[in-house]
Amino acid sequence: MYSGYSFTTFDDLCVYLLTQIQPKRVLDIGAGEGKYGRLIRAANLPQPHLTAVEYEPGRKDELLALGYDEVRSISALSLMDRPEETFDFVILGDVIEHFRKSEGQDLLEYLNYRCKFILIVTPECMPMSSPNFYEGHNSLWRPQSMQWHDLWAHCRNNVMHFYLLRGYLGMNEDPSMRDLVNHVNAQPFMQQRNSEHQTTQVRQLTLHDTISLDLSEDQSHHVFFRPI
Image (tube, rainbow, N blue to C red; front, side, top):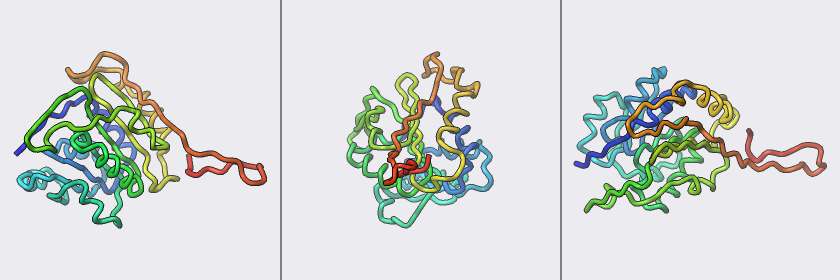
């Protein structure tokens, strides 16, 4: 059984976002030892339904004991076999770098149509190899990799990247991405170092908003392809 290490660099940020978004259905992809399940519980959400996708079948009982409602011992790419399924919040913590870049891109675009928010934590410059391909680091996810998306936020600290993508579901619901980013950046924990793997620089989320904005045919008002 493979056991990796997960930095705590953005743990406080993850918990804060969960308290603000209050998701009811959460999907944790690559749940591993259940780190993000613990963070979800720390957010004291009102009875969320937690689904874990963890390829190692030996993790199932451990994850259920941690409070996951459902554990699927499948590849993350197998989520595409259930296209009717939707979620409020999807977590890919320390996992997307294990995919081929094309697989990770396909998965993100698929999930973008089926969830409200996607949270991604991923490292760079961290070589990891294994006889099992998916236990190694195989793809790099710097901000250039997210340019396909029209509404997302990013923060980097040391070798760790944090992304929050706004999916297409519930686009008119609060909180808005702009409000989330502003509220996060005002929090004291964004000014503090909470991990030996963090630099002392101030952490700030940067919003990337490229939502299409066109004039109506009579040029009397703007038409949004996506609500802001």
